Image (cartoon, rainbow, N blue to C red; front, side, top):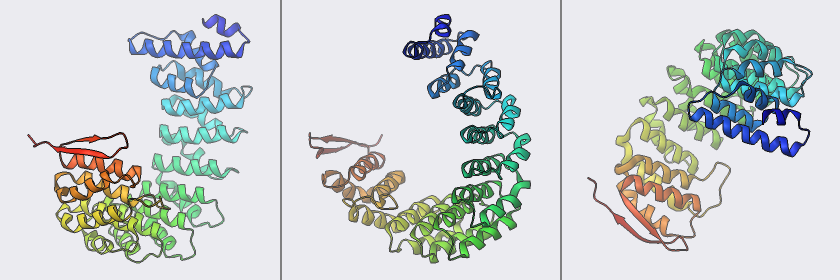
Length: 383
């Protein structure tokens, strides 16, 4: 079959043959048999996304040198070089690092993109100097990928470069977004990072997306009391709904009890998305506040169950999910969840989340007619 594939110029025949080889190679792996090396070569010589998936499943280290050869050969079609870099990243073998560093100079942007992503996924510190250089690439997507990769590797020496990128309003927002995220992941020196984040949040003219990225970055600085204070300030005072909402989520992720009073205050925010995220954060930090949280979640659930999805998603659907995650402690919300489930005018995602929540809160069986209306809820006693 491999010989026929190599000798055929019929594209449809080649496509079908590659699919058969993929299937047989995966089957061999699942049965504990070695995949013949000529099959690996044939698959890589006909590389596409599906072949890449198959190579990941097979997990044969012999594929790495062959993929490196494809990436290194500038005479190969650029799409094959791109797919080779992408697959090497997914395999995550450090033997590919030198070739991927070399690929950062490829003339094709997609190849460079795949190379920076692959280097970040592999996480080898030897790539840091090349990735720092890639921060100056002519393409914003490559610069963004390089910033992301440096954050994933955790290269503290690149913090000054990332701070400069974040502060540069002339830079592409995707790149600045990645820089903020990388700074949060690196986390040291925390004083410099926190100061930079504070300056961005205090800048009233800053783009909302960048301020949101800074909030996400602060969420990773869980050991910093300054980070918690900044998030509390953003939750209570920021004019942007998205910033307040994400600040609540970040505080829940950090889990600092000092945030509880601010989160309780945010339960009265005018925006449902903020109220819901504050409720979720409170449940994570201090479940004893459930008596304050449940009425807020039920109100959001009921008031927005038929509304069209807004800019910030559907708070009613999220409220139902949070109630479900609370389990038995949210029993008082069962009547509201049942009402939503029975109301065919409610959004499908709200009803679906309500049904799931009921299963977590009570061991129930739900029977529906053909129109989706609930016929009966049968509560089973817990064993």
